[in-house]
Length: 421
Image (cartoon, rainbow, N blue to C red; front, side):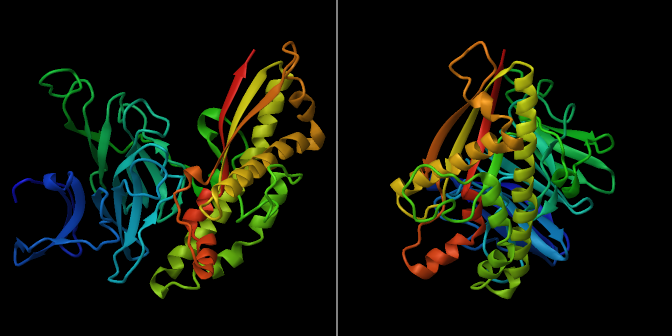
Protein backbone atom coordinates (compact mmCIF):
# COMPACT_ATOMS: atom_id res chain seq x y z
CA UNK A 1 0.00 0.00 0.00
CA UNK A 2 1.00 3.62 -0.43
CA UNK A 3 2.89 5.38 2.35
CA UNK A 4 3.93 2.09 3.93
CA UNK A 5 7.29 0.38 4.12
CA UNK A 6 7.65 -3.39 4.52
CA UNK A 7 10.92 -4.61 5.99
CA UNK A 8 12.67 -6.99 8.44
CA UNK A 9 11.29 -10.25 7.03
CA UNK A 10 11.88 -13.52 8.89
CA UNK A 11 10.69 -17.01 7.91
CA UNK A 12 9.27 -19.83 10.00
CA UNK A 13 9.98 -22.70 7.62
CA UNK A 14 8.14 -25.36 9.66
CA UNK A 15 4.84 -23.47 9.63
CA UNK A 16 5.54 -21.82 6.25
CA UNK A 17 4.91 -18.39 7.74
CA UNK A 18 6.65 -15.11 7.02
CA UNK A 19 6.94 -12.49 9.74
CA UNK A 20 7.76 -8.91 8.83
CA UNK A 21 7.49 -5.28 9.90
CA UNK A 22 5.12 -2.79 8.33
CA UNK A 23 5.82 0.88 9.04
CA UNK A 24 3.19 3.55 8.34
CA UNK A 25 4.34 7.03 7.41
CA UNK A 26 0.90 8.43 8.33
CA UNK A 27 1.14 6.97 11.88
CA UNK A 28 4.25 8.93 12.86
CA UNK A 29 6.21 6.14 11.16
CA UNK A 30 5.16 3.61 13.80
CA UNK A 31 6.10 0.01 13.00
CA UNK A 32 4.07 -3.13 13.70
CA UNK A 33 4.71 -6.84 13.18
CA UNK A 34 2.64 -8.87 10.72
CA UNK A 35 2.56 -12.48 9.53
CA UNK A 36 1.53 -14.20 6.31
CA UNK A 37 1.06 -17.94 5.71
CA UNK A 38 2.27 -19.64 2.52
CA UNK A 39 -0.60 -21.67 1.03
CA UNK A 40 -0.79 -23.27 -2.41
CA UNK A 41 2.38 -21.49 -3.42
CA UNK A 42 1.09 -18.02 -2.49
CA UNK A 43 1.36 -15.91 0.64
CA UNK A 44 -2.06 -15.12 2.08
CA UNK A 45 -3.33 -11.76 3.29
CA UNK A 46 -1.08 -10.47 6.05
CA UNK A 47 -2.40 -10.25 9.60
CA UNK A 48 -1.18 -7.91 12.30
CA UNK A 49 -0.05 -9.80 15.41
CA UNK A 50 -1.87 -9.25 18.69
CA UNK A 51 -1.99 -6.00 20.69
CA UNK A 52 0.45 -7.23 23.32
CA UNK A 53 3.14 -7.69 20.68
CA UNK A 54 2.13 -4.59 18.74
CA UNK A 55 1.77 -2.24 21.67
CA UNK A 56 0.03 0.89 20.44
CA UNK A 57 2.06 4.08 20.30
CA UNK A 58 5.46 2.36 20.08
CA UNK A 59 7.62 0.74 17.43
CA UNK A 60 7.52 -3.06 17.37
CA UNK A 61 9.93 -4.39 14.80
CA UNK A 62 12.59 -6.84 13.57
CA UNK A 63 10.79 -10.15 14.30
CA UNK A 64 12.71 -13.41 14.44
CA UNK A 65 11.51 -16.92 15.24
CA UNK A 66 13.48 -19.19 17.57
CA UNK A 67 12.73 -22.75 18.70
CA UNK A 68 13.63 -23.94 22.19
CA UNK A 69 12.33 -27.11 23.90
CA UNK A 70 9.82 -27.49 21.04
CA UNK A 71 8.36 -24.05 21.80
CA UNK A 72 8.18 -21.43 19.06
CA UNK A 73 9.32 -18.07 20.38
CA UNK A 74 9.05 -14.69 18.68
CA UNK A 75 11.95 -12.36 19.46
CA UNK A 76 11.62 -8.70 18.49
CA UNK A 77 12.79 -5.17 19.29
CA UNK A 78 10.59 -2.43 20.72
CA UNK A 79 10.94 1.02 22.28
CA UNK A 80 7.88 0.54 24.52
CA UNK A 81 7.72 1.82 28.10
CA UNK A 82 8.99 -0.43 30.86
CA UNK A 83 12.31 -1.26 29.20
CA UNK A 84 15.86 -0.53 30.24
CA UNK A 85 16.75 1.96 27.53
CA UNK A 86 15.69 3.03 24.05
CA UNK A 87 15.04 -0.18 22.11
CA UNK A 88 14.98 -3.43 24.12
CA UNK A 89 14.63 -7.04 22.99
CA UNK A 90 11.48 -8.94 23.99
CA UNK A 91 10.04 -12.41 23.48
CA UNK A 92 6.56 -13.90 23.11
CA UNK A 93 5.68 -17.62 23.07
CA UNK A 94 3.66 -18.41 19.93
CA UNK A 95 1.50 -21.29 21.13
CA UNK A 96 -1.93 -19.86 20.35
CA UNK A 97 -2.53 -18.79 23.95
CA UNK A 98 -2.84 -15.36 25.50
CA UNK A 99 0.73 -15.05 26.76
CA UNK A 100 2.64 -12.03 27.97
CA UNK A 101 5.39 -10.15 26.18
CA UNK A 102 8.50 -10.43 28.36
CA UNK A 103 11.64 -8.32 28.37
CA UNK A 104 14.84 -10.37 27.93
CA UNK A 105 16.26 -8.66 31.02
CA UNK A 106 19.34 -6.56 31.88
CA UNK A 107 21.87 -9.19 30.84
CA UNK A 108 20.86 -8.47 27.24
CA UNK A 109 19.19 -5.06 27.41
CA UNK A 110 20.93 -1.83 28.42
CA UNK A 111 20.39 1.92 28.66
CA UNK A 112 21.18 2.08 24.95
CA UNK A 113 19.53 0.24 22.04
CA UNK A 114 19.42 -3.52 21.41
CA UNK A 115 18.10 -4.38 17.96
CA UNK A 116 17.96 -6.96 15.13
CA UNK A 117 17.71 -10.26 17.07
CA UNK A 118 18.48 -13.60 15.42
CA UNK A 119 18.09 -16.87 17.33
CA UNK A 120 20.27 -19.80 16.24
CA UNK A 121 18.69 -23.19 16.96
CA UNK A 122 21.99 -25.00 16.45
CA UNK A 123 23.82 -23.42 19.39
CA UNK A 124 20.79 -22.03 21.30
CA UNK A 125 22.29 -18.56 21.00
CA UNK A 126 20.86 -15.13 20.40
CA UNK A 127 22.76 -12.88 18.02
CA UNK A 128 21.87 -9.19 18.17
CA UNK A 129 23.29 -5.69 17.78
CA UNK A 130 23.84 -3.14 20.55
CA UNK A 131 25.23 0.38 20.72
CA UNK A 132 25.83 0.21 24.51
CA UNK A 133 27.57 -3.07 25.32
CA UNK A 134 31.37 -2.70 25.09
CA UNK A 135 32.28 -2.51 21.41
CA UNK A 136 34.25 -0.86 18.63
CA UNK A 137 31.78 1.95 17.93
CA UNK A 138 28.27 2.31 16.56
CA UNK A 139 26.35 -0.97 16.71
CA UNK A 140 28.33 -4.18 17.26
CA UNK A 141 27.09 -7.77 16.92
CA UNK A 142 26.95 -9.83 20.12
CA UNK A 143 26.22 -13.46 20.95
CA UNK A 144 24.57 -14.83 24.10
CA UNK A 145 23.61 -18.42 24.89
CA UNK A 146 20.23 -19.21 26.44
CA UNK A 147 16.55 -18.51 25.87
CA UNK A 148 13.67 -16.38 27.24
CA UNK A 149 15.33 -14.54 30.18
CA UNK A 150 18.16 -17.00 30.84
CA UNK A 151 21.24 -15.61 29.10
CA UNK A 152 24.99 -15.69 29.40
CA UNK A 153 26.82 -12.36 29.30
CA UNK A 154 26.84 -11.11 25.69
CA UNK A 155 30.13 -11.67 23.89
CA UNK A 156 31.36 -9.22 21.27
CA UNK A 157 32.11 -11.10 18.03
CA UNK A 158 35.21 -8.92 17.68
CA UNK A 159 36.94 -7.78 14.51
CA UNK A 160 36.79 -8.35 11.60
CA UNK A 161 33.10 -9.21 12.13
CA UNK A 162 32.56 -5.92 13.98
CA UNK A 163 33.88 -2.51 12.98
CA UNK A 164 33.84 1.12 14.20
CA UNK A 165 30.71 1.66 12.07
CA UNK A 166 27.25 0.07 12.46
CA UNK A 167 27.12 -3.74 12.24
CA UNK A 168 23.53 -4.97 12.37
CA UNK A 169 21.09 -7.68 11.25
CA UNK A 170 23.24 -10.75 11.99
CA UNK A 171 22.02 -13.97 10.36
CA UNK A 172 23.58 -17.39 10.95
CA UNK A 173 23.26 -20.08 8.25
CA UNK A 174 23.92 -23.28 10.19
CA UNK A 175 24.56 -25.86 7.44
CA UNK A 176 27.26 -23.73 5.80
CA UNK A 177 28.84 -22.47 9.05
CA UNK A 178 28.57 -18.95 7.70
CA UNK A 179 27.03 -15.73 8.88
CA UNK A 180 25.81 -12.53 7.26
CA UNK A 181 25.36 -8.99 8.52
CA UNK A 182 24.64 -5.49 7.27
CA UNK A 183 27.25 -2.77 7.79
CA UNK A 184 28.10 0.75 6.69
CA UNK A 185 31.80 0.24 7.43
CA UNK A 186 34.49 1.77 5.29
CA UNK A 187 34.81 -0.23 2.09
CA UNK A 188 31.05 -0.31 1.48
CA UNK A 189 29.75 1.08 -1.77
CA UNK A 190 29.22 4.75 -0.98
CA UNK A 191 27.56 7.65 -2.76
CA UNK A 192 28.86 10.42 -0.53
CA UNK A 193 31.01 9.75 2.53
CA UNK A 194 32.79 6.49 3.36
CA UNK A 195 30.10 5.27 5.78
CA UNK A 196 26.94 6.59 4.16
CA UNK A 197 25.43 3.30 3.06
CA UNK A 198 24.78 -0.25 4.25
CA UNK A 199 26.10 -3.30 2.40
CA UNK A 200 25.71 -7.01 3.13
CA UNK A 201 28.80 -8.86 4.37
CA UNK A 202 29.54 -12.55 4.91
CA UNK A 203 31.73 -14.01 7.67
CA UNK A 204 32.94 -17.46 8.69
CA UNK A 205 31.71 -19.00 11.94
CA UNK A 206 35.08 -20.66 12.55
CA UNK A 207 37.27 -18.61 14.83
CA UNK A 208 34.41 -16.76 16.51
CA UNK A 209 34.95 -16.18 20.27
CA UNK A 210 33.48 -18.83 22.55
CA UNK A 211 30.50 -17.75 24.66
CA UNK A 212 30.87 -18.23 28.41
CA UNK A 213 28.59 -20.87 29.87
CA UNK A 214 26.24 -20.22 32.79
CA UNK A 215 28.56 -22.07 35.16
CA UNK A 216 31.61 -20.13 34.00
CA UNK A 217 29.82 -16.88 34.74
CA UNK A 218 28.52 -18.07 38.10
CA UNK A 219 31.97 -19.28 39.21
CA UNK A 220 33.93 -16.29 37.97
CA UNK A 221 36.64 -15.44 40.51
CA UNK A 222 38.20 -12.19 39.27
CA UNK A 223 37.06 -8.61 38.75
CA UNK A 224 37.64 -6.12 35.95
CA UNK A 225 35.93 -2.70 35.86
CA UNK A 226 35.93 -2.80 32.05
CA UNK A 227 33.92 -6.01 31.84
CA UNK A 228 32.11 -6.20 35.21
CA UNK A 229 30.58 -2.73 35.45
CA UNK A 230 27.88 -1.78 35.97
CA UNK A 231 27.65 -4.15 38.93
CA UNK A 232 24.00 -4.74 39.80
CA UNK A 233 22.87 -5.83 43.28
CA UNK A 234 19.23 -6.68 43.95
CA UNK A 235 16.80 -6.41 46.88
CA UNK A 236 13.53 -7.87 48.08
CA UNK A 237 10.60 -5.46 48.20
CA UNK A 238 10.98 -2.60 50.70
CA UNK A 239 14.32 -3.86 52.00
CA UNK A 240 16.24 -2.92 54.05
CA UNK A 241 14.24 -1.61 57.05
CA UNK A 242 10.70 -1.87 55.63
CA UNK A 243 8.15 0.85 56.43
CA UNK A 244 10.90 3.31 57.34
CA UNK A 245 11.40 6.89 56.19
CA UNK A 246 15.02 6.89 57.32
CA UNK A 247 17.75 7.43 54.75
CA UNK A 248 20.30 5.42 56.76
CA UNK A 249 20.65 1.78 57.80
CA UNK A 250 22.98 -0.39 59.86
CA UNK A 251 22.32 -3.44 57.68
CA UNK A 252 24.94 -4.51 55.14
CA UNK A 253 24.24 -5.99 51.73
CA UNK A 254 25.27 -9.52 52.64
CA UNK A 255 22.35 -9.70 55.11
CA UNK A 256 19.96 -8.45 52.41
CA UNK A 257 21.38 -10.98 49.94
CA UNK A 258 20.93 -13.94 52.31
CA UNK A 259 17.33 -13.00 53.12
CA UNK A 260 16.45 -12.45 49.46
CA UNK A 261 18.15 -15.68 48.40
CA UNK A 262 16.07 -17.67 50.90
CA UNK A 263 12.84 -16.45 49.26
CA UNK A 264 13.29 -18.17 45.89
CA UNK A 265 10.45 -20.67 46.37
CA UNK A 266 8.13 -17.95 47.70
CA UNK A 267 8.74 -15.89 44.57
CA UNK A 268 8.04 -18.82 42.25
CA UNK A 269 4.80 -19.63 44.07
CA UNK A 270 3.55 -16.05 44.18
CA UNK A 271 4.55 -15.20 40.61
CA UNK A 272 2.60 -18.15 39.16
CA UNK A 273 -0.47 -17.90 41.40
CA UNK A 274 -2.57 -15.89 38.96
CA UNK A 275 -1.28 -17.02 35.56
CA UNK A 276 -2.27 -19.80 33.13
CA UNK A 277 -0.40 -23.07 32.74
CA UNK A 278 1.14 -22.18 29.38
CA UNK A 279 3.46 -19.56 30.86
CA UNK A 280 4.06 -21.10 34.29
CA UNK A 281 7.25 -22.96 33.34
CA UNK A 282 8.67 -19.88 31.62
CA UNK A 283 8.05 -17.67 34.65
CA UNK A 284 9.53 -20.26 37.02
CA UNK A 285 12.61 -20.57 34.80
CA UNK A 286 12.95 -16.78 34.72
CA UNK A 287 12.84 -16.53 38.50
CA UNK A 288 15.26 -19.44 38.99
CA UNK A 289 17.62 -17.73 36.57
CA UNK A 290 17.26 -14.45 38.44
CA UNK A 291 18.15 -16.01 41.80
CA UNK A 292 20.85 -18.38 40.58
CA UNK A 293 22.60 -16.06 38.15
CA UNK A 294 21.86 -12.41 38.84
CA UNK A 295 21.65 -12.40 42.64
CA UNK A 296 24.49 -14.89 43.20
CA UNK A 297 26.64 -13.31 40.52
CA UNK A 298 26.17 -9.86 42.02
CA UNK A 299 27.18 -10.99 45.50
CA UNK A 300 30.18 -12.83 44.10
CA UNK A 301 31.26 -9.81 42.06
CA UNK A 302 30.87 -7.47 45.04
CA UNK A 303 33.27 -9.55 47.09
CA UNK A 304 35.83 -9.67 44.29
CA UNK A 305 35.40 -5.96 43.66
CA UNK A 306 36.37 -5.28 47.28
CA UNK A 307 39.45 -7.46 46.86
CA UNK A 308 40.32 -5.56 43.67
CA UNK A 309 39.91 -2.20 45.46
CA UNK A 310 42.00 -3.32 48.42
CA UNK A 311 44.92 -4.34 46.21
CA UNK A 312 44.76 -1.04 44.32
CA UNK A 313 44.68 0.95 47.57
CA UNK A 314 47.65 -0.96 48.95
CA UNK A 315 49.62 0.13 45.89
CA UNK A 316 48.86 3.78 46.69
CA UNK A 317 45.96 4.47 44.32
CA UNK A 318 43.15 6.95 44.97
CA UNK A 319 39.73 5.59 44.01
CA UNK A 320 36.30 7.12 43.37
CA UNK A 321 33.24 4.86 43.15
CA UNK A 322 29.83 5.95 41.81
CA UNK A 323 26.74 4.13 43.13
CA UNK A 324 23.14 4.67 41.99
CA UNK A 325 20.07 3.34 43.85
CA UNK A 326 16.72 2.40 42.30
CA UNK A 327 13.34 1.13 43.50
CA UNK A 328 10.23 -0.28 41.86
CA UNK A 329 7.17 1.96 41.54
CA UNK A 330 5.46 1.03 44.82
CA UNK A 331 5.09 3.85 47.39
CA UNK A 332 5.48 7.59 46.79
CA UNK A 333 8.49 9.50 45.52
CA UNK A 334 9.81 10.64 48.90
CA UNK A 335 9.57 7.15 50.39
CA UNK A 336 11.32 5.60 47.40
CA UNK A 337 14.07 8.19 47.56
CA UNK A 338 14.75 7.27 51.21
CA UNK A 339 14.60 3.56 50.31
CA UNK A 340 17.19 4.11 47.56
CA UNK A 341 19.45 5.83 50.09
CA UNK A 342 19.14 2.88 52.49
CA UNK A 343 19.96 0.42 49.73
CA UNK A 344 23.06 2.38 48.83
CA UNK A 345 23.89 2.40 52.54
CA UNK A 346 23.94 -1.41 52.65
CA UNK A 347 26.71 -1.41 50.03
CA UNK A 348 28.75 1.18 51.91
CA UNK A 349 28.31 -0.88 55.10
CA UNK A 350 29.45 -4.03 53.30
CA UNK A 351 32.53 -2.30 51.90
CA UNK A 352 33.34 -0.92 55.36
CA UNK A 353 32.99 -4.35 57.01
CA UNK A 354 34.61 -6.38 54.23
CA UNK A 355 37.27 -8.82 55.40
CA UNK A 356 37.22 -7.63 59.02
CA UNK A 357 37.26 -3.96 58.05
CA UNK A 358 40.34 -3.89 55.80
CA UNK A 359 38.83 -1.19 53.58
CA UNK A 360 37.44 0.98 56.39
CA UNK A 361 40.65 3.00 57.06
CA UNK A 362 40.76 4.08 53.42
CA UNK A 363 37.23 5.49 53.65
CA UNK A 364 38.44 8.12 56.15
CA UNK A 365 41.56 9.22 54.27
CA UNK A 366 39.86 11.54 51.78
CA UNK A 367 40.98 14.73 53.57
CA UNK A 368 44.64 13.76 53.25
CA UNK A 369 45.46 13.84 49.56
CA UNK A 370 48.87 12.28 50.20
CA UNK A 371 47.32 8.97 51.24
CA UNK A 372 45.37 6.44 49.18
CA UNK A 373 41.65 6.78 49.75
CA UNK A 374 38.32 5.31 48.70
CA UNK A 375 35.65 7.93 47.96
CA UNK A 376 32.07 6.79 47.38
CA UNK A 377 29.75 9.04 45.36
CA UNK A 378 26.04 8.22 45.57
CA UNK A 379 22.84 9.11 43.72
CA UNK A 380 19.44 7.91 44.95
CA UNK A 381 17.05 7.77 41.99
CA UNK A 382 14.09 6.28 43.87
CA UNK A 383 10.96 5.96 41.78
CA UNK A 384 12.08 8.72 39.42
CA UNK A 385 13.71 6.23 37.06
CA UNK A 386 11.31 3.37 37.73
CA UNK A 387 9.41 2.14 34.67
CA UNK A 388 7.07 -0.38 36.31
CA UNK A 389 3.50 0.38 37.30
CA UNK A 390 2.22 1.37 40.75
CA UNK A 391 -0.96 -0.72 41.25
CA UNK A 392 -3.80 0.85 43.20
CA UNK A 393 -5.49 -2.13 44.89
CA UNK A 394 -3.92 -4.47 47.45
CA UNK A 395 -4.08 -7.65 45.34
CA UNK A 396 -2.42 -6.02 42.34
CA UNK A 397 0.21 -4.43 44.56
CA UNK A 398 1.07 -7.82 46.04
CA UNK A 399 1.23 -9.42 42.59
CA UNK A 400 3.52 -6.66 41.34
CA UNK A 401 6.11 -7.42 44.04
CA UNK A 402 6.85 -10.81 42.47
CA UNK A 403 6.90 -9.74 38.82
CA UNK A 404 10.23 -10.13 37.09
CA UNK A 405 10.32 -6.51 35.90
CA UNK A 406 9.94 -5.20 39.46
CA UNK A 407 12.59 -7.65 40.66
CA UNK A 408 15.05 -6.17 38.18
CA UNK A 409 14.18 -2.60 39.19
CA UNK A 410 14.84 -3.08 42.92
CA UNK A 411 18.59 -2.66 42.71
CA UNK A 412 21.64 -0.54 43.13
CA UNK A 413 24.31 -0.18 40.47
CA UNK A 414 27.99 0.44 40.96
CA UNK A 415 28.46 2.34 37.72
CA UNK A 416 31.98 3.70 37.75
CA UNK A 417 35.35 3.07 39.40
CA UNK A 418 37.90 5.83 38.77
CA UNK A 419 41.50 5.15 39.76
CA UNK A 420 44.19 7.83 39.90
CA UNK A 421 47.64 8.22 41.34
